[in-house]
Length: 448
Image (cartoon, rainbow, N blue to C red; front, side, top):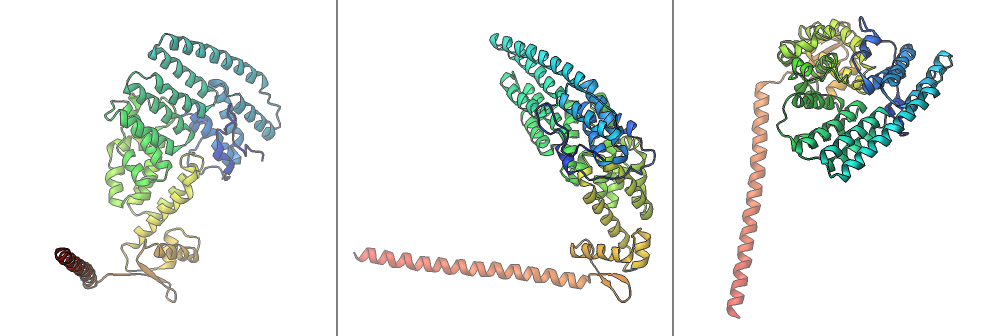
């Protein structure tokens, strides 16, 4: 299969999808009712293009359909001639059709050049008039043009230059938010976090819908950086109604399904079972997001109700879909392993000892050997306090005698007291020696 192995090029020659060069292929998602068109239909602009290319690069079964979606979005809503040309070439290789994008590329390049000249003229006139407001407006038009051409790095730099035209801190905050939005589309989570901090430094108490958008950016940034506990604390507090009324869904960068998916997986990876019920399952606000992805709701219920085989099956289906998500995709293996480890821990909690063959069957392990390797890793990592009894085939949990725990605490207190006493003794000895030296020096000085 031919692929865009080096990533899609932007008009500036930068790789728009540089992470695609490290693509790992996967099969079509097994998630019930999955439809690529419906999935991508919730996004707009470069968010849609990036997701379509990401899916096409990773799933051979969906590559042609994904690249066609990306091509259509580029053609309808951008001036990105280089990305358009590369998509045309890739689709030609995949389908055998002759897809020529030269005419469209030539036309949009001329449109972009004309708009560039016009905007630069406006900017120069505004500078001569010493009008910060007009200069800022022209600079923002220039940023929008750069984005339409796929020149994301140049767009961010232009936003930074726009700070020279800001009349107040609110203008600065809006520029930082625009830069965070571009970084969000590109999946540059460290930059997103940086621009959020800059926004909050000049606008510590933002009004709606800015406050909700910043919360969404923080949540997605934390998830993208694998900070699961931070992400779920942000996600479970989001309001569906505020995101809807604030136009956040309308921007087409994040959907209600994304919030449900990120919150569910981050919660399963970082929360205790009772916390999952309180913060996710019984959370009315988060429930509105779960309504848009019932599969996540069923997974949470199975996990909480200890239906581990069902939870694992649902997790596998959801993760097959997550491999096509550019936010979750790079972390699927680590995230899935973390959740499975938590399921193993939960399964072992009620028992003093467990037959490993029964455990392997209940948790859908392919063999007892695979389970044993998993348990060895978890015991070494201190995720489980137990030992494997090879001859009997049992996992035997360590039980801590309260008297042993009390004796350990007493021993620790004794060691701490002994250390403090030694330090105090050394301090006293030092002060005595200093006192003697001072006294001797004083006598010598007196005699002279």
